[in-house]
Length: 54
Image (cartoon, rainbow, N blue to C red; front, side):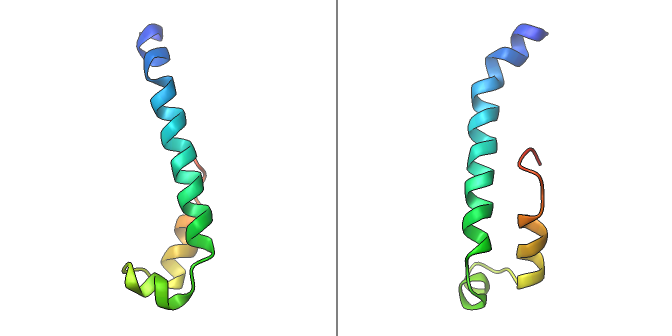
């Protein structure tokens, strides 16, 4: 069980870094760009406020 968690640790860390990077970039998009990807400002703020592990 512990070994299994250790094997997946690099993947989990990579995923968490990617989430952090994506959310940081999302924070800087203007309303026009948010609309292009189908988000409004409220939804973007909610996503940006999530902790990196979620």
